[in-house]
Image 1 (cartoon, one colour):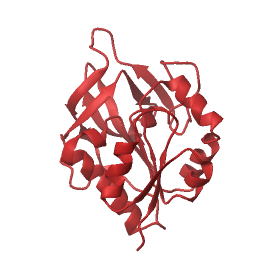
Image 2 (cartoon, rainbow, N blue to C red):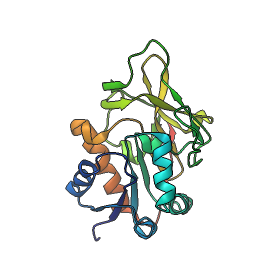
Image 3 (cartoon, rainbow, N blue to C red):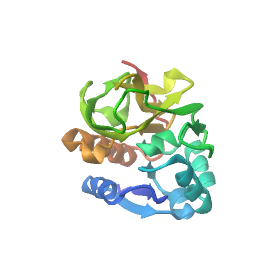
Length: 217
C-alpha cells in the first residue's frame, strides 16, 4: 500500500512542523497546507493548533477551509484534532465571539478561578474508550498540556478521556470518524508519538473503512 497522504491544516495557529515530522516518521506523506483542495483529497487530516478562538476561526473562513473540513468529516474519513483543533470543533467558546465549527455540540470554557493558567506541563489522561488511536497507550499515561480553556461537550458520550486540573475536563473526544485531544502528542515523548503512529497505521490499514467505533472500557 502506498504511503497515505495526510493534510496538516495550517490556519496560522502554531508550529506545525513537529506534527508533520512525527507523521512522516511513521510513513505518511504529510503536507502542511491551507489549500482546501488538499483537504478534500487527503486520506487523513490532522487539525492542530495553538492560539485564540476568534483569530483562528477568521483564518479558517478567510482561507475557505470551513466547508472542506465539514465535508471531510461528513465523508467519514480519519480526522485528528489537537489542542485548539479540539476546541474549534465545538459550537462556541468563552474565549471569544466567533462561532466554532459546531461538529460537536457544546462550548469551550475557561479553566476555573484560583488555578494557574495556562495549565502547562505533564498530566495524566483517564481514557474511557477503546479506539484505534489508543492502541498500545496505557490508561493513565501522561501527556504534555498547554491551555487555558477546555472543551465541554454537551453529549458526555463523546468524551473519550478526562484529565483533572481543578475540574475533570474533557482531554479527548471521539465521535464517529473524529478523534480529538487537548494535549500535544508531538511534545509528549514516546507515548505521544505512539498516538501519531496509530493514526498513520489506521489510515494505511483501511482507507476505505473510515468509520471508527469506540466502546466503553
